[in-house]
Image 1 (tube, rainbow, N blue to C red):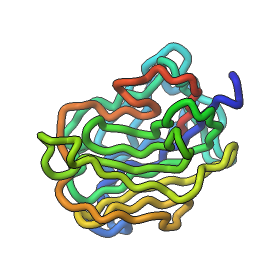
Image 2 (image 1 turned 45 degrees about the horizontal axis):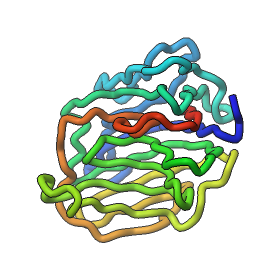
Image 3 (image 1 turned 60 degrees about the horizontal axis):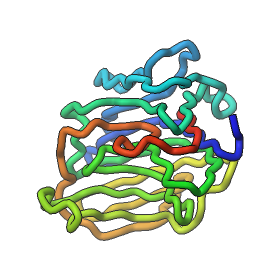
Length: 214
């Protein structure tokens, strides 16, 4: 493994809010507690288990005291959650995960993405965190694509918590629990039959990075 081309991520929850975070109903949660696991086991109760896809996925120790991380090579490895009704996150939702990043700057690093619906990633150009989605007139997606970036680059080799929220009026991105940026957005998030993918952009998964999710 080339450590200078590694992206290591821990995802804790993917959830919908009703409407306060203290009352959040989890839609999906991967913790990777079992080092012998052969799939991503959803502990939210919704049974949205993710299939390990690729040639070299394996688990290794993650954050100290917080279990394991699943490592993806960034070329042909990813977690395919598929398309299920609970993943249609219309207006009130939060995406969040832990990431340990060693980026090469070759392309955006996708934490999670449901194509033409919503995503959370690290940009190629600036290495800043970015949250985005498609809202409103879903038959004209290029006109409804909205995003919000964090103001600073994600540091190499440091565990960082990233989150994004949408409440039907504002799109927010958080870094280590602190509000980093806000954008005014309206309308429901677009719904489609694309799969939710962890660790790669589904339509372009030939990255030269290595990804590790915990």
